[in-house]
Length: 72
Image (tube, rainbow, N blue to C red; front, side, top):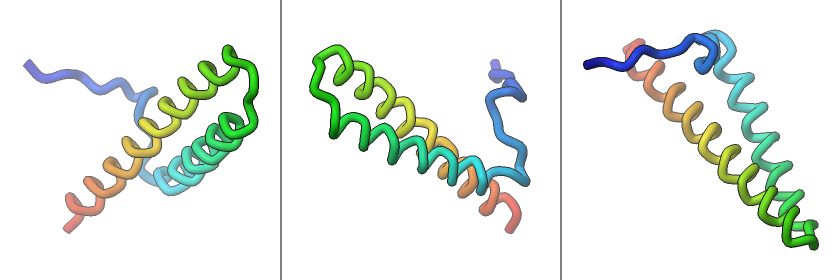
């Protein structure tokens, strides 16, 4: 059985570059926030944000690479 992809979860093909730029900015921000956090609760929060940003960034990079290879 194939999974259906939800359109809201996928960026439009023409905007993939911009989505990657935004994901990279979110990733950089998460690293900076984690570096400056002192409170244990905030550290936990920023770790979750960092993991989320990493996963989204890698997803978008793989998505862009897959689109490029399918165009050839």
